[in-house]
Length: 231
Image 1 (tube, helix red, strand yellow):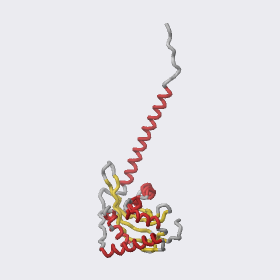
Image 2 (cartoon, one colour):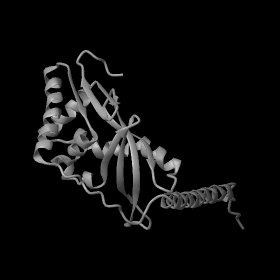
Image 3 (tube, helix red, strand yellow):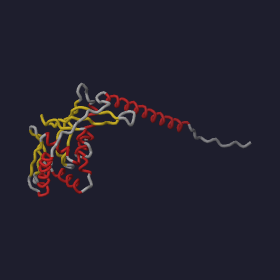
Image 4 (cartoon, helix red, strand yellow):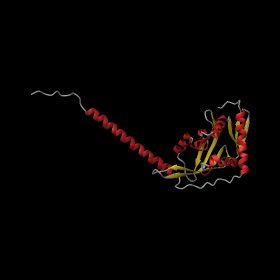
């Protein structure tokens, strides 16, 4: 009887590799799930299930016109390449948030400027955050401290310094991510950078051209100096 040749190949090493791969995938999924649950529980510690009502301040037509005049003056300076400077108080910043481009997106119902002091803009916030299970919301209710800054590539940005929740501690990991992703800047200034209509593009050009911004006392000072290089 003729004997069939026996292959020297063994499937055992391949099976071991597949099993090890599956174990790694399962281990990763378990780790990711555990991390997700832990992060969600940490966020639950300083958020609430219901928002705090933020009532936009009453702004009359004269106040709006005065603020618009200031904003237009810095835009004129940018377009003419001449020096320009404006100052904005806390009330005027709230008036800016009451302008149509912000009010239409209801920005002034989740953030309100309380004061400008100690080198920061102090804001009352009630930000909705995605909750768990998916489809639910939780709310970050507290005080956010921020400051304006000039970045070489994007121009004027709003950076978060701290978030304070009465009686609770905001997790450092959440705060670091919030700063890193520049969520506040994306909400307040970002839409103008991405706006495709003519007016939006004009605003974006001015925001990018501004050469200096600082907090001085209880005001934000915005300057355009054509000969000044951005840092």
